[in-house]
Length: 209
Image 1 (cartoon, rainbow, N blue to C red):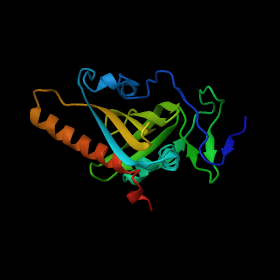
Image 2 (tube, rainbow, N blue to C red):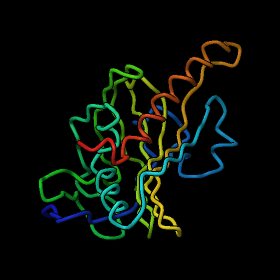
Image 3 (tube, helix red, strand yellow):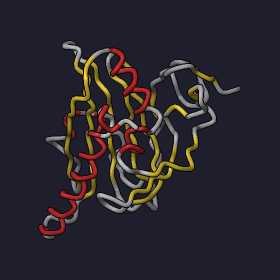
Image 4 (cartoon, one colour):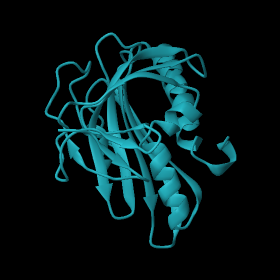
């Protein structure tokens, strides 16, 4: 089946089956709000919410950027070697999607190599666990794969609320050092929060090139 080309964002939801290529067990946990007060054993969690404007156009532009790796690129990540599943599980059809310029639209099961030099050096491959596509909400959950420098999962979401405000939401889960290593644990938490804060602010219009 040939790929569907889209003028503007064509959306689809869905999720991939549990994948043992990921380097953590709590796959998909960030899709649930209760992961913040009750993270899995050995993990820490956090949630950030940042307003980026208002109105349907801001929501559409932010959603389009988010679903083509724009938040991560604007946060300083290199996104390379992107691969979509030959047939992406979806209630709306099958196969990868592309924008009119050939940019791949994020779909369940897609993988990519991420690398960043700051605020924390990191590199490794990630996999899209699920895609959220609902009225006023669009985003995805992605997690680190084997060989990555981190063990983490993130939910990235753009929301358009009833008061016409548009927000970016980031919910994250990361492996923490043993509690007896309090200094290392605090340092790991601080590094994670720096990365998350940069990502969640990346889609603000002030960061547009």
